[in-house]
Image 1 (cartoon, one colour):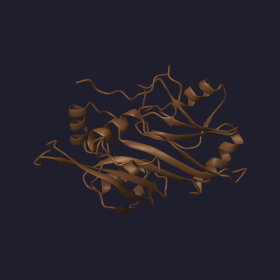
Image 2 (cartoon, one colour):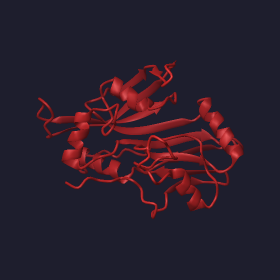
Image 3 (cartoon, helix red, strand yellow):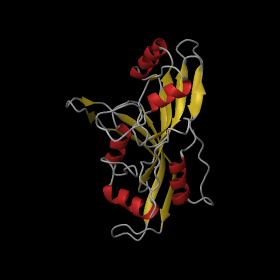
Length: 247
């Protein structure tokens, strides 16, 4: 079976979602690192360098997305704007919304209030709002079950802890498909063997903030990346798939 490889190619320009004199947002592909990391020595492409070369100027990532997460990634184009946006993120003034495909049938709505521990042992408050957008049951045997159930969920974190959404979904026993190490390895293997799917089905759909200088309310949305869209179509079916806007 051919396995889908979602990693971006340097020959393809990054998709710009928003651009002004001091800010730019891209639709980050699944599999692309934001910047160099000693724990990902296999990577040779990075969003910071690619966008810098594409725009011909220095760029500052004002937040992070995991390597396997796709969607809205925001950069500042000046040091002053970078400092201002970093402050907004630190003070919780920026709203981010994600979509994920997870194992099982999730509740219609749920507040996940579950503190998370940092690498240094410090326990931090962490809260995520969940809303179920769609559910599906497909004729794919898994374990003792003759079918498999999945949900498309909208996730809105009110805190920004590392791997918060991934850990929170694992905590409520609805792990994100393709997540390692917080997800279900048996489900990940099922998707690899049956669908050739080898990424994580988490998409940063929307970011909202107030421009630090003009006070303009800015909303940036990202279309689904190809692999997320393929799996959404495969699981929920084109004929039955309800339109879910990029929120």
